Image 1: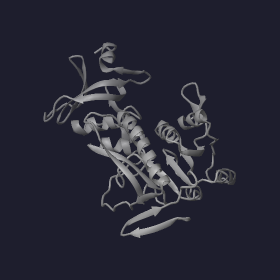
Image 2: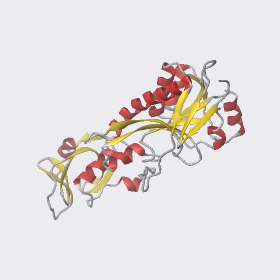
Image 3: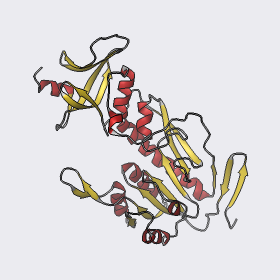
Image 4: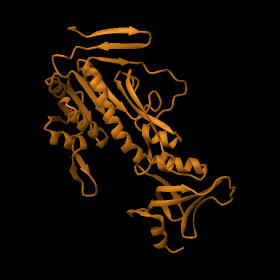
Length: 324
């Protein structure tokens, strides 16, 4: 078979690609650790990543030292050429990218690509997304799944098209969410599961036989918009379960915060003490050397917090340092 052939069966597209005479030339787009883990796994599995595109170096931290992305550091350690375009539509960048003659693009945790970029590779561009699509399309799928109290989530590989996170699915893996698991913990598990899924997906493509499935149409599908500061506020109108879900769904970053008698605090870890207790006085209190949040249906204990201008600390250490 000398050319790409597509066979349409119902709502499924089965694609056969003859890759017996050469390896896929892959261009990789990504920035954080979540993406760097997949990049390392792809190279370790023998895939030919001919170029990496990542964010421009920028000042970070209090010292405002110039920082490099996790993907850039990984690419440099692997000896892969790296492009850092300020403008993804610039002719210079597009010409540079085209010079690598890509067969396939892989994008993970990167900003939105213009069509001239994602359509350039011969086979298109694939994305790894941190949810079971079509649910939780958007910038923060891992956070929102926990905030909404989901018990299951997953990772999905799919091909990009015009509308964000709507392309045809290649593969997915379902994952359980622990009852007390934070977004940081789930992110790290998902990072490795996603890397394995990406390698398996690329193996299917390079072997020359894979399937794509259009995303099912679901009414009232759940979304995962970008997290804004006001959204991250914890309030006393939440139930203890919703309070717990929101706290762990924002921990450690960006962190759920609340106005308290002790100032504005970030809460990073906690547990439900009781449910079903009707209470008149709501809000933060110190009781028996415990930092409690009184909610309408029960008490919630804060175990780790961050006070303004202070490092993260156990709540007992904070209590020991204040005058009640």
